[in-house]
Image (tube, rainbow, N blue to C red):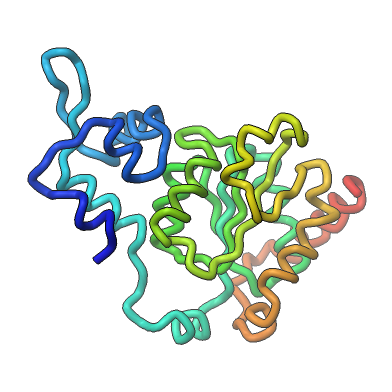
Length: 230
C-alpha cells in the first residue's frame, strides 16, 4: 500500500485543494474532474465542492490499474505501446503518420486531454508516453509531476512536445528537469530517432501491431509529409 492509499479514507470527504495536493494537480484540474464526473462530489451551502473519499480511491485505482502478470512477461506478449496525449488534431495525425512510417510494430493510442490521458496511462501501461506540455483539463506539467509523485511512470519512457520557446517554457522547468523535450517545429526531424533510442530492444523483440488495411497509403502520406516538413 502506498502513502496516498493510507491518506485517502473512503468514508471521508475532501476539498478540491486537498485532492489537488494529493494528486499533484492544479485545483482547477480537480474541479474539471468533478464536472466531468470522474470524481463524485457534493456542494456545501456556500457552494464549495466536497469530494468523496470513495470516488477518489476508485479514480486512483483506475489510473494505476495494470495486469497481474509481471512486466517482462506482459510486454513480451504484446506490441510495443505508445500513448500520445495531445489536443491538436494536426499533431496527432503527424505523430500517427511518423509512427506508421517508421515503427509498424508500435501500437499507438491517442488521448485528447490530460485527464483522459492520465486514466489511459494507468489502463494501458505504455512503453513510451509522448505528451504536450499545455493541455485542456490538466496541463502536461501537472500530469507529469503527478505521475512522478505516485510512481506510476515506472520505466516508461517520456517525451514532451511543446510549441513554447525556451523562455515560455521556463515556468514548467520543475516538471521538465531531466525530461526529453521536442520543439514542435522540429518534431519530424527529431521524434523518430528519439523513439528508436528510448524503446531500443523492445522494438526489435515486439510482435508487429495489428495494421490498418490503409496503412500502406498512410505510410506513403507520412513520407510525403515528412519530406515537406523537414
